[in-house]
Length: 263
Image (tube, rainbow, N blue to C red):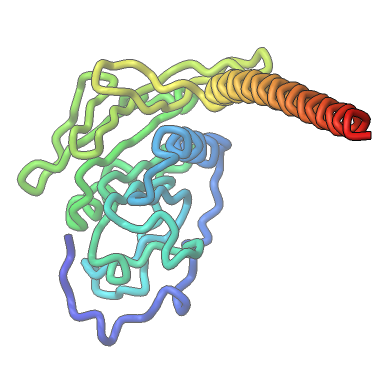
């Protein structure tokens, strides 16, 4: 967590929302967005987290607070899901109670972007607890496809077991194969503590659809039961009304009989 005098620092409205660096491969957009969509399902009821995609993170660890670092994706905890009920244009640490992201994700591009050098050093200085580097298989290189580092005593330590469980976050992260429309691709997934992969978006939607159908069926059964109860109530009312009318008819006949006797 960073602490600094924020009195003379610019506001988020005065700062650019990104560094305007174009992505050079599809994975740089797809991978972090896929993780965001999964979080929307996993943590849908929570309001204490924010996951940014290709968004500028402004901080005070450098000489110029107007120069951000822009991860492909990042996760911050114990912050508002929507800042003051609005969408963020950037993540400004001094406007977030000095809470820095707990996780930063970089997807290696075809053009080296300092993922294993300058960015790693800056994330460590910033205090980002988990630094995740995803290197798509087609780019090869000497590094692994997925490397997750944890900040320990100011230095990043490679967490070799996959998926990597991150207890401070309550999630694990690892790779998996996603099949959609007959096309397979490797993506990053969130995992639980037992190493079980949280389902992909399309699978989650199917679960949601099934649950919605069950709820619809239950609602229909309740409606039918209510209608049956209403029908029984109406039948009872009709019977009571018939009995009332019969009593009134008998009462009238009794009155006429008494009058006849009197005559």
